[in-house]
Image (cartoon, rainbow, N blue to C red):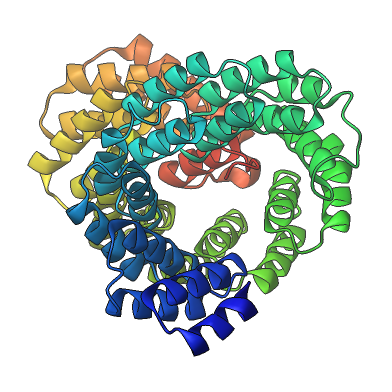
Length: 482
């Protein structure tokens, strides 16, 4: 066809001939040539909404999104009811990182394309990316009601939910899909991934029980089985499975970083660093890997190396919150309150709903003497999560500074109800009881302090913020969805 239309143009270089040639070239994937000839057809008078629409698609396929969006907008300016162009514009805006604008376009064609399952998927994606998760979940429910037996749709929606931190919804979708196709290993693998993301290791292992080891990507089944065992607190059982996954795909960063986490749980810190360095060879500019390297260095007491890794991670990814928090925790532990305040402020700015971050900022502000803002941050932490131990500890110190001893005692009692493993808090509680003349309570608290102190390995414990950070990190084990 391309050769025939090329010959036609030599005989009759008309708008129609260039249009047909461009169409044939586009069908062959020669988008750059097609764009040139579509433009020539327009110059010769074939300037219709449909041609602008097709030209817009050609630009998009040629990785020229701005030009593609412009052409689709031109098509719609001339024919506002052009449904295909409106839908294509919504998808283009979504891919261009403009979810609000994409959402407006997709909403306009919702009724016309309600029988298209992928309209619902892209609408939910736009809502998720526009930070309207509640609306996205409603759209997911509506999509599954409209297409109750479309396995591909269920799988796509589940993956979308996983990507946007909705593992429970993904599990629900995939459990329904698995009932429709109980022998579909692809659905089982997705369900196992969702179960891991929801921190359900028992269910993960149950789902994978009859899945062939070779199913999915190389090493994927063994990796998820090992990850589930790690989440179950069985690192020794997990290690050989994740090691076999690494052997199956030696450059897989998820496999390597998870294996490093298992090695860290086993206190094989040099081994963990070696695994993370291998992962870095595959992805040298990964701020997430630098953060994990920093965490291992913290466990080894190499705080200078940890600080350097955190700083490098924040330079690479200024919107990644964890390195800022870890950096602030180290600086706080080393007595540099002002630097810790700066780091914690950045973490809070990125994740304003994280209770531990507000607690840390409140503690650092207390250290620097900013009492008013310190109290605000500690109260904010406990409003977000009343189970944040460190917020009670540092608010107790704030109350003590203000001579409100009864309130300080109450906060310390709440702390030890949440975390019984930190000796220093019992020492502080004993002191407060003593100042109040409660000698029996003071004696009991001091005895508890002495008992716990004797159990601390090496006679020392890391600063509370670092200790709590590491506990949080271990709970948030790496899963395939991350």
